[in-house]
Image 1: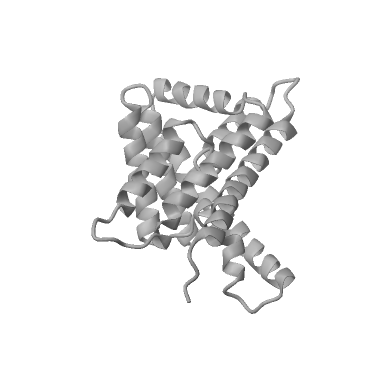
Image 2: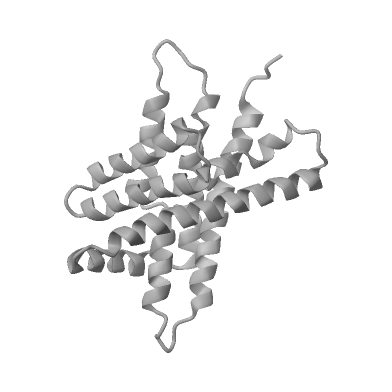
Length: 223
């Protein structure tokens, strides 16, 4: 259930970005930051926030690598499904009562997001994973007299939003909308868009894990 709540918050951030995309995208991005900050503060289950700690969590377990991998992978899959349910529910509930101009704006975004090739989506997803790990991993940073951790969250999240990086949870409603819009097109290959979304998930995961590995190998030993 915590995963569904996290998805709902991401959906609210999506709505703010949709409404403010043309008027003031910076305010929309900041509202999205508040949604992500709430998830982090409440320690809710967000896939892109949990996946980066996949390998570092293994060091804290006494399980065999295979047993831990299966257990952790199953946990992350459940979190991902809950996130997708939450974000899609609130986003499409919102779209159901919107005027045509808002619907058209959402349609244009959906078509644009999935008109890119797989390589572009994969790279932009990796970069998003890096930003989300930095934001969610702020607890690893030592608290100093002047605490910069809230600023780190703001900068990391606004960076991935304003740069157009791809977040698999935030982009899921547009993925579904794109599938719906193209369902009757004769030359439409549904598997291509599904593969694009899978690479988006993989990119987010890989980006977060890479930064986690760098952090774990570079931080001072706590002896």
